[in-house]
Figure (cartoon, one colour):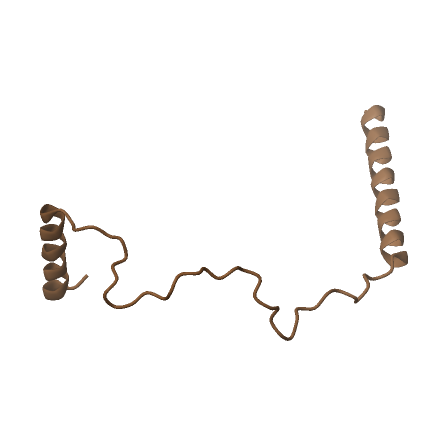
Length: 87
């Protein structure tokens, strides 16, 4: 029993000492400086390189090929279902 009470006393004493040390450190530590970088008020110049191609027109395709008729039918069926019943 004496060993248990001794270890309890040592444990309590060490925790009190650690807590006191943390409080003392917190009081003596200076706050962080207020010199953080702020975002620019004007956006930086463009850094990406523009491509050399002309803008797309309404007659140019996007590269997508014709859909499979089965997929096209499924999409039409689902579109019709959404239009009539809703999501």
